Length: 232
Image 1 (tube, rainbow, N blue to C red):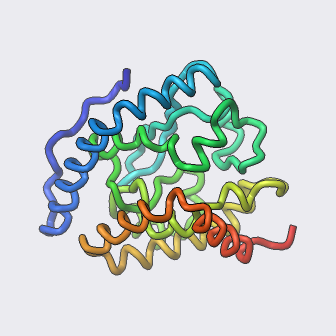
Image 2 (image 1 turned 45 degrees about the horizontal axis):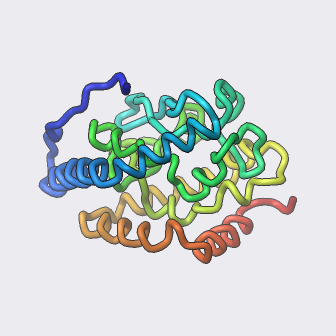
């Protein structure tokens, strides 16, 4: 059982667009949890059969205004191994059972609909970071990114679809991620937030549904991300 009490009422927002965004989050997260309940049950059974318990993984991430919150995923790593690194390339030996398949197609992220319902996250927004990753960003960038709720998806998340794949086979993937990929991702997030509108959120959702499970989109992402990394 998840040890949280959901915040069913939207927070007051200074702009009508933000109030509409929160109402949209509540409607989408609530409807998605109801419609996807059979899939969530099947995935929970799959994790239990292939990897054992616990079924869910909880890790504290940095949310809006620097507030820490527990983020939920289906567990894809060996219990207790996440403390070694918050970055897991596709060839990481900590990945267990059906973990690689769940991670590749982002199915392990579905429990975060609960985070959206509770008000910790939004449907669209910068992906939530572990505290150590947030501390590595310049203060100005970090303040901009943390001025909004983190999200399930955004423009940067789509561009970085294949980050786990491009980090595979490299020494110290977390160091590479922090030095090369995270700064590029943060710049993209800040740029996206500077041009935010409710319509832009709708565009991101449509693009996510079109690209998230597309092998060609992953190939294009991998090609772009390899150009950001040094030669292996």
